[in-house]
Length: 304
Image (cartoon, rainbow, N blue to C red; front, side, top):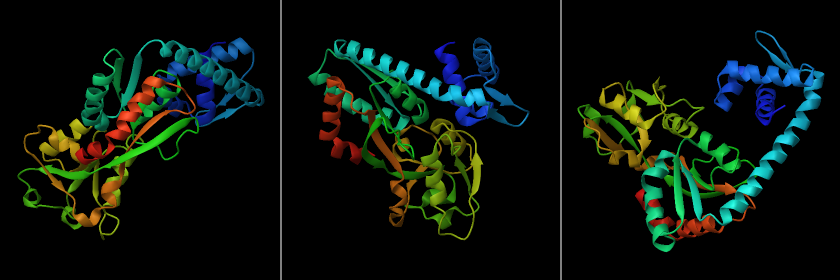
């Protein structure tokens, strides 16, 4: 019986779906199935009842689940405790950031931080919120800058920083490109390129909220979850997209960025950025970085 097997079992038990569990674990379904079979073989009993459509816990599986959770939780706590002890003497800060934070926020913070603590090794990881949160909880990151999920884990501290402003990205030869600001009514019959909601919920909801008070439904095109790809699709005249304002600093030929009308001020506050770390954890290096964040917050927020 291995920790990996226990983590796989717990995730399948939570999802009751091998496909969803494999996505959450970033693992091929066949590999996930092998781990479950190995675990069941080592215990000498079936933990899951499987059919072509359903997955359910057996009686032994339900009993084993709570024990498995305790074992994994204890192992994670032990790992985190010793990682913290090692980090106290390492002079290292590991930061995770979504693309919006990585492009402007992190460089500014690092410039100030290095002036004060030049000997601290700073490591940066850029990824999506859904990928950064488990890395923070497992102790592989010390501090992350993300879009906070709808329900924040109770073990994490969440400090809201600011909202990003947004703009419409549209092909520069389109008639709308001549406007100084955009209203929802302007976008009738224009395909809107959006990410999958489960990957980028804030960005998806932002676009949908724009059309709450109009009498037509937007035409949606789900092409990609990556901003660079979405912008390239706009340049290829496949549609328009609501994007964070910082994207307008990218050098993208044939794309015009236009602000939303002032009446959409509530919609323009739909892309939050938060700093998140493990609650009740002591880390002087991380705390020094957060002091800089709060000191520079007003200047930082103006850039977004």
